[in-house]
Image (cartoon, rainbow over all chains, first blue to last red; front, top):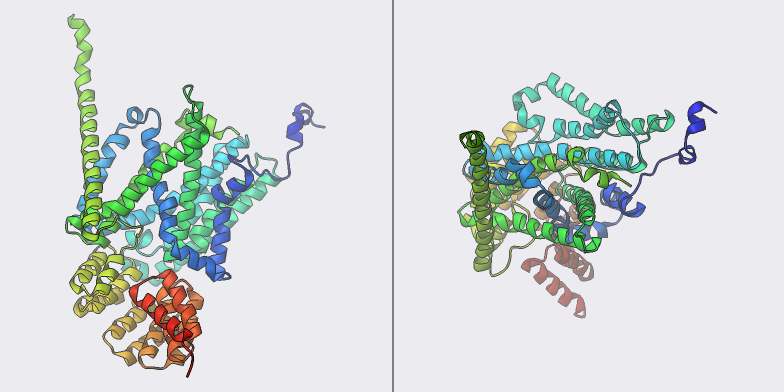
Amino acid sequence: MTAVGATAPATALRRPAVDPGHPFVGFAFDYLVIGGGFSLVVLALLQSAAMPAVSVFLKQHLWTFVLLSNSAHFAGSTVRLYTRPGSFRDLPFLTMGLPLVSLIVLGFGLFFPGALGQNLLSLYLTWSPYHYSAQAYGIAVLYCHRSGAPWDEREKRWLRLACFAPFLYSFLTIPGAGLAWLMPSTLLADPAAAAVRSLAASAAQVASFAGPLVLFVRHQAGGRARLPLISLLAVLANAVWLVMLSYQVAMVLAVITIFHGLQYLAILTIVHVKERMKRPDNRAPAWRHAAGFYACCLGLGYLLFQVWPHAFVLAGFSYAESLLMVVSVINIHHFIVDAFIWRLRRDPSYAAVARP
Amino acid sequence: MGRDLSPMSTAPPALRAENLYRLAFRLGLLITFGCFAAGLGHVALSERRLPGLEMDPLLRARDALARGEKAAAVREYRGMAAVNARDLDLLLQSAEGLVRAGDAAGGAELLGRAWAEHPGDARIHTALGWALYWTKKYDEAASHFETALRADPRDFRAHAGLAEVRLEQQRYREAEASLLRALALDPTNGSAHNSLGVAYALTGRPARAVDEFATAARLTPTADILANLERARAESASPRP
């Protein structure tokens, strides 16, 4: 027995071969919702066409699911921003300045659809897969912390690279966004440039799946702090969403956004409830905090996506322009807010959230 | 006293920034809630309902077309093309919509733009096929759909378009075969189920027609589809001569 082994606590010696991760709610919920396992089942059914009834059911209720999950998740970042203690003091521009800036940009986008509107749409479509990958990385790291695994910066960098390979693939391949938006089409049509782009996309495609798997195996075999299985699932689910499936096909895209929203709402609600339960004056049970938070997200989501575009129709714009501009600006606002509210290391509630 | 006051010299800029932030926040809140009230009021007064759960940017255009309000449809399709010209699929849908709404020049301009940016793309043949279908040039439409399908046999819209052409040409068995291929690719398309129901009804299979119309009605409960379902149910229930 080595010196380290002799002094190690007995629990450390009896670690399971694979760390499943410490769930927030329970293994079934965490693996299916936060890890994205349920999305893989549904998407496999959709892609295989094995059960057409599932596709028909989803199509029938698609917009209801989008409202309950995706619209609510967009509103969720805003609700979280304004209910987080000290937000107005710590983030004055984000809380008080950004809404007006967003409204001004929205107005200009509507008045100048060719010059600005199109670019806002392309910006949101480019940023969206980055946001998805960042979420997968955040979830993976969160479960690592809950497992008590001390990851150094070098290991985190590898994990980040593995998580962002799907974004790179999307950036290179999405029509009308990413590289296709930033580079002139004449240059992209050049055979040499097209070959390089295709090669890079293939490499990113392989890296999206091979990266996290290699990292997982290395950590299992190398005696390092282990990547929990649920972290691997979250990263691979994101790779399936962005790489394996056609991101632009409307139905698949909508289903992916539903599951991304569900994942986001679950984590956000857990953070919110844990924070509220810690308050010394708290009297309410956890479910009431969760229900209240979700009700706010749902109400705001409805107002933002279903009601707001009609205001611009009243002002003389077409519904198509209004909806696309509103969706673009809400997305960009969400991405910016999200980048700040998840800086958990600086957040005093982080320890409480990450603790198993 | 003077010394006590001296730190105040640094305070005004910070205060000014804070006041500006507060002003911006109030203004933003006022505009946002004003928009919510305007949006709710507009739908409630003009359509006598609350805004629904649709988020399809072309929904209003299709509704306008269904009501025969061609000018409104043209406005919607043009608005769509102005904002979303980079998405080929939506650009082509706008082009087809413009042709269908009677703005053939606008549709042709969008198709030309699509061809210039994506020369040889099979989806443009599909869109051209639909544009020709709406202008009742069925043989030319079929030719474009077939070209698209040779390039991409998984193009749902090309199968569906070819089926519509065959229905118009009263070649019902060919229409049925195309629709079955289309529905194997996307079983959630209400319009294709409806067309398949029509093909079954016109070839003397009312029970199958009822099933297809019923699926179509679940997916897209439009007046046309519901009327088809009712008629097919009546035919199916009536004794054969």
